[in-house]
Length: 188
Image: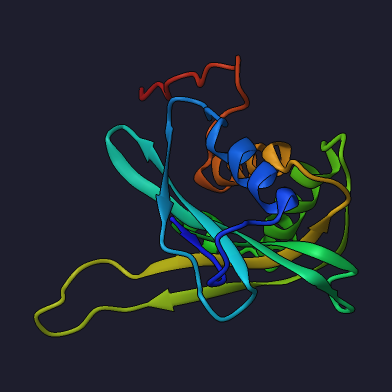
């Protein structure tokens, strides 16, 4: 779903970026769909939602938002910006690791560093949230990792940026790299 200014002619940069994003086919564990974009961040916007399924269970979700302002933004260092959000429940043994936020950020940077088209002006946060359930909401304590970031692509189209974001989703979900099989744990 696109949010656009009231004009009927869309900027060519924006339409090329959206077309390229619609052509991305991620690995089978990742489901992508167009979702409503924010309407007040830029004159033109487009958003994709993603979720990672492992053994039929959703383990990671997120959004990647394409923003375009033909006038450009000084803070963006350009006229096109990508904004991402990723949330995943973290396994209990990882939740206490003080380096987990740095590892989460490294997953994003590693994915973006694999781009051939490049990026600049990156910024963001990694947040860990621990939830304990009480009363009628009984269950184990859980920890969620939330990564929020934005960056400016060096050129359009941005399909490789969507592919990098899918790689971030896979890393956050604990999926092995494509072509590598996970070995089942053997209990003795």
